[in-house]
Image (cartoon, rainbow over all chains, first blue to last red; front, side, top):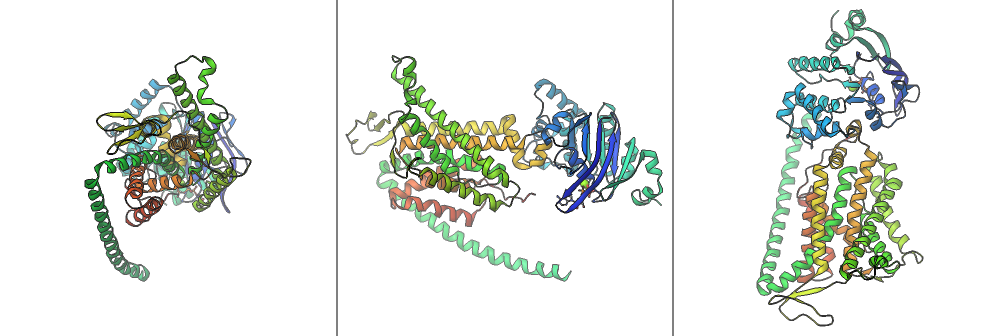
Length: 236
Length: 375
Ligand SMILES: Nc1ncnc2c1ncn2[C@@H]1O[C@H](COP(=O)(O)OP(=O)(O)OP(=O)(O)O)[C@@H](O)[C@H]1O
Ligand SMILES: [Mg+2]
């Protein structure tokens, strides 16, 4: 088991955002976490990354408890996140944003190789290498956010709504790259509004509803579940 | 629906009257600026030598203010805090060097190794040691202040941290003024090296102690040159650090978005500490140079230079490093010209006049961009 999330209870002040969330990820999988707005998907990812703390339970990565580890150390262990809204460093150039992705690494020449691999996946970034992050289009920012997260060579990549605000064509492109990243050995936890798309690339899925996992199974099972079809896939 | 309509209607009206007022204010300021310019030009024509002398002393002041202003602007950039204790760190720099020189003779330590070393080597090595020690102590002091007083308030409303900064400033000033600490008196400062003055008139000549330089000459000193050169070097190194190095990029990333920086594996606390340490080291350096230039120190030494450097940083656009530098140079000239041509006591008032004008006309400063409120 690569990641084991057990009984998370996370609060924002009085708001009980996660109410006993548990799930697991195996090495090499793509797992998707779907659910309506406000279900707690981003909160789950932020807790795994160490930006939020759970009052109970634990998060284990390769058997090691990371629930009390500082966020920067979790990145060093190999968990990288593309946050909701991309969170590009607007005043930094594309190259500097990618440099920041490689902040935990000190192997200079290898970092350059990683950057070339990112450019191979996202040629558009190479053309804009000296442009400020804040001046990129939404789609380009998404590519930069993913490229930046890959620069730390993560074993587990957390993606929070990568298709948000993108055109259908660009969404296809991003999902193609997600599959590619996965096929190169990176495990992926994918949070999506676009459930149909997410289920098409995922091996397994969890459905989150107001802070609790209400359904889980293989992507096909979840896709065929009548309730899911009703609520998230917009088909009756 | 209706509510939205009514606000829409009232907005343009407010804007027009605001704009009109701003124009009146701007016109008034332009007239003032023109009058000041006329006075300056007339004075320059009447006595160009005196004018040059005043500009030189303004440069000396301005370059010291620049060393302080850089710290204000860097710290503001990263934690959005006006660190009012910064001027007191500057004061601490002067005091550390005082104790190092007067109590411990650190400025002549190379004689312990070999008393026959050339005096110039002893002076240069000894003085640099004193300065580095002061910078290090100031860095440590600022990092401690940040850990103890500011860090616990990082997620509190900004005003809480601001008030705390003022409290820390008072604490340092009046704790230092206790009799068993530094005492409230002015203490004569023993310099780590001698200040030498030259005058320019048909070439450059040494000013002999006790003899006034001849009329119609411009004087300048080694400390003035050192202040300018060191301040420029520090500005350039800082610019290089922030633009080109891994730590510098992490500082900019952290300044923009702390959580995103954490997701990159950046230790945000460490970056903030480094920022405080850098700013404080520069202020400490400024404190030593200032004390050498104006050799009488007490625990309130940092108050006015601190405030003036703060105004300089606001004028340049707080958060901007080149802005702080240019703002400080303008501040130095404004102060020196005021002291020279208007009246000496006015030199302190001019800083606040400038602050008020900047806040009225261009609150974001020369290089500043309107701040977007971030969560
Ligand atoms: N900073 C915050 N302060 C207070 N409440 C918050 C905060 N962030 C999230 N919440 C609340 O926690 C709950 C879960 O939010 P979360 O962002 O995890 O949802 P989500 O599933 O990612 O939704 P979306 O699909 O809209 O991104 C919501 O009810 C939200 O209002
Ligand atoms: Mg979300």
